[in-house]
Structure formats: C-alpha cells, structure tokens
Length: 390
Ligand SMILES: *Cc1c(COP(=O)(O)O)cnc(C)c1O
Image 1: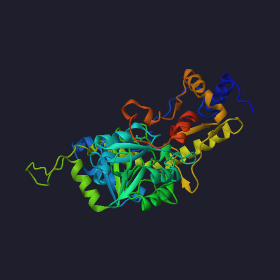
Image 2: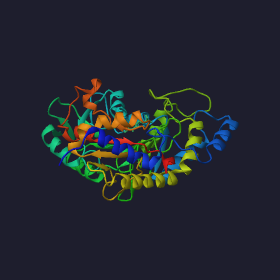
Image 3: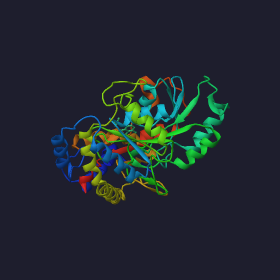
Image 4: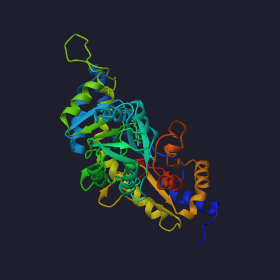
C-alpha cells in the first residue's frame, strides 16, 4: 500500500472540506448567535446588574443543572478557574500530584500548577482520545504504593490525589472504567468536561460522574458567555464551598467586609450569564447541527484512503464540538503539508495540541510512557466545525 504524495492527499483533504463547508475559506470555529442574546443583554444592562452575581447567574446555573443532571452548578469566570477550584475542593494540596492526559489543552495542567501541585502525565486511548484505563492501571501498578489509603509515588513520595479525565473534542472518555481504577488506586476524579457540554456516556452527562466536573464557555466552545465556566457536582458541601471560595470567601453580611480565608474573584458576572442563558436555549440545535456536520464530513471523506473522520465512542452520544480527521499511520508524514495547503486556501485546520510533556514548563514532570498521546498528535487534524456550516 502506498501513501500517496503530499500534494495529492492535501488536495483531496481540501476538496473534501470544501465540498462540505463551501468554496470560501472558514476558520476552525466561530460562535453562533441565533436567539435571544441581544434581548437578554439589554435586559441585563437596563437592570444595572451587569457584574457580580445576579438573576441571570442563578438562572444559568439552574438551567445547566437541568441540561447536565448535576445537582449543583457554580458558574465561574473561566473553565480554568472552575478546574482550579474543583481540584482544590477535591483536596489537592501543594506538593501533591494530579494525573493529567498528555494530550489536552494546557489549561488542564495549568489549573494543577496554580495549586502548587504537579501534573503527572498519563496516556490516552485511540478509541476515545481520553485517558486509557488499561494503561493507567498498568502504570499505577508499578508507579505507586498504597499507604494509609492513599496513592503514593514510588519515584518521589508525593501523594497522587486526583485524576482529570478530559472529554476530548466533545467525545466522552471511558469514565466508568476510570472510576473502577480508583477502587484499587484511591483518588478523586475531577472531570474536564470543558469541551463536552451535551455529550453523554451511557445516558449520563459528562462531568457528572466524578467528584466534580467542569465546563467552559470560552468563545470557541459549543456555547459561549464570552468567557466563563462552571463546576458541576452532586456534593452540596463542595458546591457551597465553591460558591464561597469563588466570591473572595466573603462571609454573608449586609454591610461588613469579612473574609474567612483567601478566596478568589472567580464568579461569573451577570452580563456573561445573560449571554449564556440565550446560548443555552440554542444548545439542542447546535448539537444537532454538529452531528449533521459529522455525517457530511464522513460522506465527503468516505472515498479518501488514509483519512477517516473520528466518530463518537461506543455507548456515547457526542456533541461533536470539534470535528477531527485521523490519518492512517502511513499518512502521518503528510500532516504538515495538509495543514499548510489548507491554510493557504483560507481554511482553519489545526493539529491536536502539542503533548504537554513536550512543553518547556512541563517537560520535567513525572509521567508514564505516552506512545498513544504522541501518536494522536501526529495523526489528528481538527477541521472547520462551526455549527452554522450546515
Ligand atoms: C477550553 C478548555 C479549558 C479551559 O477553559 P477556559 O474557559 O478557556 O479557561 C480547559 N481544558 C480544556 C480541555 C479546554 O478545551
């Protein structure tokens, strides 16, 4: 089997993308504003409650609870802030380690670092693109010992306090199998569901299976509040502590300023929540469009040897936030040609993130062998995914 020429495969990819999204170049992802955005923003401005916590924040949180099935939702200024606070409340302390997939956006690891803890990189699986439960178990069997009911690193004596499964590009990770790993290797799970609002595994919404989960409403996510995030949890105590910590740990009082610990200014402003409420009304339509876009791409790439469109994992329903091509091994040498060819034509394709253990700030972190994460970086390409393209 040959692997074609870089020109030929690049042309084929560009033609297939064009056949789906049209002859004029488009960026990788743009938000869609189709409903009540302007009306709610106006309402918010007229009320003068644009900042701090307000009625749109309460409404946004309660609607997110309905969509996800989480008992408690705490809206935050970003997905990264949500991760930081959820990890802290899951008990992550300075000097601890937290298991992080090597293939994720840098914010997952940054949230760990902000707490003075250290990311410990583990491998992903081809199928879900998320943490691999089998490789994880194998790694922990040699890398840790259990002391007083805790996972302690044999390499450096640090406690491995939690893991952060990421539901990559909207595809649910094998969360039940990861949960099973924590029976033998006790640690908390904080899910990074920042890309997977609307995605479920076996009928359960991503971000609601671990101790806590996190969402993001950054401008490029499936819905946006401009910037924003949320913590999902069924634990009422964790939720009330998250509310407290993200509002500068201010003790409730009509006029006194009293703070009982060092908190954060991480609560979502009302004006951002107003945008979020309007966006959330469109969520079913946005997911429907993204799933249709996946089908169109699948048809367009059906005849192209060496390239497939990544499909949702078994027993999962994905929001297909970012559509993804997977190159056959013999075609990965052509990744850069495909990217530069399509960029030259104005189409916003993008490789998967550089594996985090290759980045300067994270190159000395503890890690497992990471063959799959490295190979995913070499074989995956995100293609234009805006909902309005269908
Ligand atoms: C977007 C994203 C985040 C961070 O969310 P922000 O709202 O941008 O802070 C974290 N992890 C992953 C995987 C993301 O895609």
